[in-house]
Length: 490
Image (cartoon, rainbow, N blue to C red):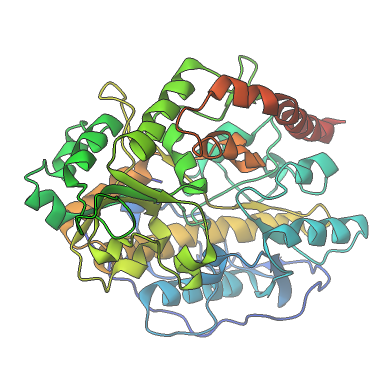
């Protein structure tokens, strides 16, 4: 995501209702293009979001005769909450999503329909079934971030984005990190754009505990480049307290750092500049975690969790999951934790808390590291090989990307994350840094984020031994992904 100006944007509500949940699989119709009117600009000339990287896509008005455009997606909270809107409800994020769909529908003369086959693992078989049957049921598929990703190119059931007509992947509203990390020999099975809202982890901090312990302002540390894991550990040790005086540090006490010991922690290597997979000299992905730096990162983080006496962590349970209405055993909202590593998408759950807090990127490995790096856990778009009109898919995805950049991203960023969640201007500024270097990692998305988080159960992990046990499986999936991409050229 681009660097943003922090001036809050006033978004125009400019279109009426959108048709949703219509039937699947209408036959493709030939579009007529109206070239008599100069209509290549977006719906409102007054609300272009240049600070977010918006440029006009240059797509004239077309008429596909009311053709149904069907998007298949999984039952996943990110898609359920931030992609589709059935009606206006006065919330600027919801209404901008609603207007986006209406704008694209009117621009191209189509109607959107949405199909949810089930949880995250249900999309692949749904797409596979329609492709094998040669049925144009779905025009676009949205995937989970790390479910069945290798299977799509392996089975050859999705189109190559680089060969898709109607898209300009060089435009700033397309995610270049996906291109860099997922493309093999010029073949790109998956893509992301500003339509796919970023899902990142961050560190929340309790401003009162910072002040009570006379610690450095975390925002100043971030801006000066001194916000490192070493610094976080130093500060966390100061805040830990045995509140009830029973000489046992448990979930009734106060901690400097808390987190779920799950997938979220696999953002830590990326924050330190260590990828799971990286391209070799020929641009082919390979395992990158079997090295001394990965061992050092593991030792640093397990020391924070197990040895410093400053942290409380837990394994996943539904009763601890805010998405299920649960609360962690040491809840940030209780005021008993100074730092909390958590998905930023859950931040809205804090907006009613009495705790004053700030939002930070995950720390750097050390002060010599140039940038704060953020792993993006969002899903992807892919185009079923049986889609009836690839050119229409290209036009729709280009418009969804550009309109998201122009209207939805500003609303999501400035209103939801800024005004509703961030309690002060410094927090808004820090969001720039969090999103400025959000990146994807093929290893994580092929499901190998456990190469890090699964080792955190042990206070003395042996990264080399752990990786060696996984190596054959990892290399098999890399080979399947690469061979799947290369099969497009046969």
